[in-house]
Image (cartoon, rainbow over all chains, first blue to last red):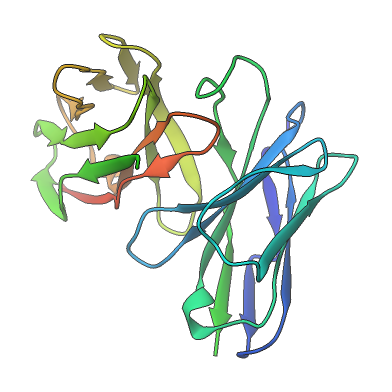
Length: 116
Length: 110
């Protein structure tokens, strides 16, 4: 049973460029969440997708957008990259059952984005 | 808003020592509480969880008890191993998102 997979593993971009990160959820999961983890810090919630819609969003600018596909996979897009966007981007999947707070989120290994 | 405060690291212990990593939280309602572990170059793995007051989560020798009266969820292990070296994150989930602490780096020396 494959876990959460993310691609690419590493990415180098320059300021002002746009980037797309991809995530395939664990089998049987229908919800995908994205987190940004700066070096030496805990992950920060970006947004969550369920039924192809953004269900909840953290405190991130509109430059961060996403999409969920019918097969539950997801993309994170970041426009007009800034140096401060350099981080590890983590995708987590879960199953929407059991009520709020009861869902366990399983994480992928992440995509390391470097903005030069 | 909701927040998690973790014991600052790094923490260095000798093998077989007792481990405690403190975690306190601020939240409205009754959030679920989690400990995640991150090994070098990897994503986060769920270590244990507790969903209501007085619940004790346990896994791989690690334990943590949901203490509502002290708003705490301290992680403990009686005898650490070199393989436990990693970064440990305390997190809460009052709703669908996880809110993490800043992490505690643990190094266990042989």
